[in-house]
Length: 511
Image (cartoon, rainbow, N blue to C red):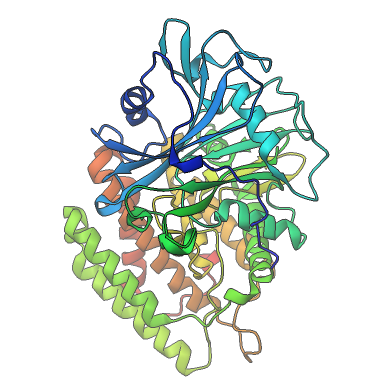
């Protein structure tokens, strides 16, 4: 299959016994104190408890060089609905001085005692060198072999669920993403970009190398952990041995700007983002076309009943958590009834929606990089790492990705302090013109008619409403001063749809 990424380097722990002697440092105690403060930890500020699932050594220079290993931990009760989360923590233990690959960044220091120092491996050249030496390299990657030139190694700030390490002199310039939450099976953040590059799409940083861990899990049932579809499916016969992608090395986009930071800067200075937004819309529609080619076996007719059921379930969940949503519950239900009427009419008149397909699943401006040399590149196909792989790779309508980007324009306008609502309106309109006007082919192959843009505009509003309701709950809990950002979108959609429920909606780029 085009999206197979199973050929990997594998690391195991013999008999499940920790092989590393930590000397005077209590690794478990050090991690317990350090982990909750990490940006990528799934439940900040909690007194979480951990179980060591496996300690996996990486080969390196003989002692007294630093010891390089990975602790695979089960964080108990910190995921959605109290689920367990499997975490990967690469570690480097120095007992003398820095090894041949140089010193670590002080930011990576976890604990020290006497001459012993324990580091987060993402910040340490010894771990990065060991990771690169053990990785499987793509046949299309630039030639790279040990010893690797690690000059300029730099961990990027602002990470959420993973840690990205800049390596400007490896493979002509590359970025190593250390996946912090592990899920048995093939991670979409490798599988999807690999498949897209193999069908010839250049809108994603090309994967150069990857690494996979084989974990001998002698603890609790892996299937109880978030991200594990089934322990037995993921590993050995007894269900306690499983494999997971642990990191990806990908092409470095030259002189790139984070899409959200770029949009905020434009908003801050009153510069229209329309041209860049239009280009981004074209890039996203190209991405969806490439995904249909790369994952053609996932194309299936859209199930409108499933869409409505899922929306109603999430509306109930949001209403139970937010007083602001409860106050709009009747109008939201009226919108869903309107959506059902439109969908029924479309089916009756032979206007089927496009098939569901593989999508990005968590698309927003922060998942896009812009370079003057290469234009827009899309990244971070992992989806929500606290969800199971099955949930993260479930086919859906492309409008879910479009809605995520529209919400991001609203946030960029607010965070950047745009002087007028017109900044976001212009960016939204331009993005939709790029997406719907760039030759996007909808509909089931072989169907006589494509879905109308009017039908798809209603579906897009449903997805944006769904996303905005999630944001309302989040902001009410965490940043109440920001709740007006998603609430204005909720009211805008409800006012537009319920005020003109019998009128033609027209092209979505004209709204």
